[in-house]
Amino acid sequence: MIPVRAGPPLGPPPQPQARGIGRAIGAGVITGAADDDPSAIGTYASAGARFGLAFLWIAPVLLPMMYVVVYLSAKIGRVYGKGLFAAIRDRYSAWLLWPLMIGAFIGNIIEAAANLGGMGAALNLLLPLPVATIVVGVAVIVVTLQIFGSYELIRRIFRWLALILFAYVAAALLARPDPADVLRATFVPHARWDGDFLMMIVACIGTSLSAYVYTWQSNQEVEEQIAEGKRRWWQRRGASLRELRRTKRDVIVGMIFSNLILYFIILSTGATLHRAGVTEIETAAQAASALEPLAGQFAKWLFALGVVGVGFLAVPVMTTGAAYDIVQGLGERGSLHLQVTEARLFYGVIVLVTLIAVALNFLGFNPMKALVWSGIVQGFSVPPLLLIMMLMTNDRSLMWDRPNGWFTNLLGWLTTAATFAATGCLVATWL
Image 1 (cartoon, rainbow, N blue to C red):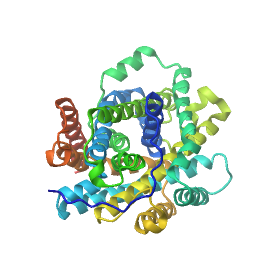
Image 2 (image 1 turned 30 degrees about the horizontal axis):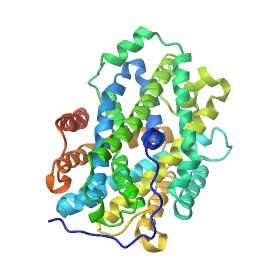
Image 3 (image 1 turned 180 degrees about the vertical axis):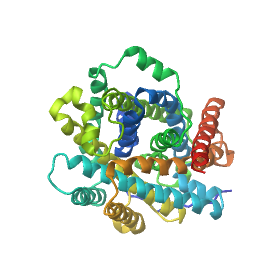
Image 4 (image 1 turned 90 degrees about the vertical axis):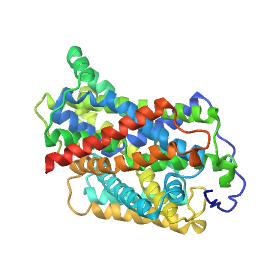
């Protein structure tokens, strides 16, 4: 038997959220937008500028991978009733828990730092202030909203800004790429076995399948059940087929949104920057210029607002995800439904991660290049966590009568093998 670690009563529960396609789209857009964080935008833009349309095939390849990893993490939270690292702590020994927890924690910090830097670089296009100063201001706003407001407040304020990412769709179409070339590049993979190409593949995998998304998704399933009044772990254990179908639908909507943006960022930068001979993105202004076919001189406004919108959605996900990792690994309480006085360690970790992320931006890294490197770091944390999630979601002591079906297992094991292979090949080129 796995021991029950139930927390204290949380007071009267909020009313359950409305169900249906509207909820699916809302929840899906948030998950998808958080996955298309500034790091993702910078990585995809760099891939399109560097390799042009020849990198388009990565989008349809990544879509089933994106779906299965987010669904597996959501399933752990929905069926087991605890977040990812709480489940790992219950099921496995400390020698496995701690390396995974520390790796995910460090990855979240680096990703948050890169995203804050990317937001600062984007806003620097509009505000005549040093990037580091803007980063501090953004971080203060994010932490203040998290502690004295709520993530729900942040989501209500900024989720519609995430729709600005659709500007890449229009910009790509207005750039008039050759349809035959686009179709060929999309469905006929073109691979180069050199370090630069493999590094970009790992970066795209890392930023699309980021570990912080796993933690966030599993814990949001738990938070949603708490909001429904299931305050004790035993109340959250198990899930109906209907609940899992709803979870699957939310994930599919979110990942299609995310993958669509991924595809058109690569297409727009490939059809504009790469075609113009700009193969290295050094500044936010260069990245913004991919939107010029649509917005002309206002391209920098579209770029900046899009990055800010997804940044304000994603950075709290990363810092809160790091807090979930630590408190669950230590067996402590941590929930967005708790007040600061009830979960000092949880909120303290959020503040600490934000402070470290801000400090890293004072080391002089190029913000746009840091976005790509943060994806590479995340790419190396993906394979071991994904392997553990596959084992856990097939473990009947955790999943009861809801282990993976054959299709989920097929996608999951293929994705696990692909992520190990990509990182292994990259290491081989370095050696």
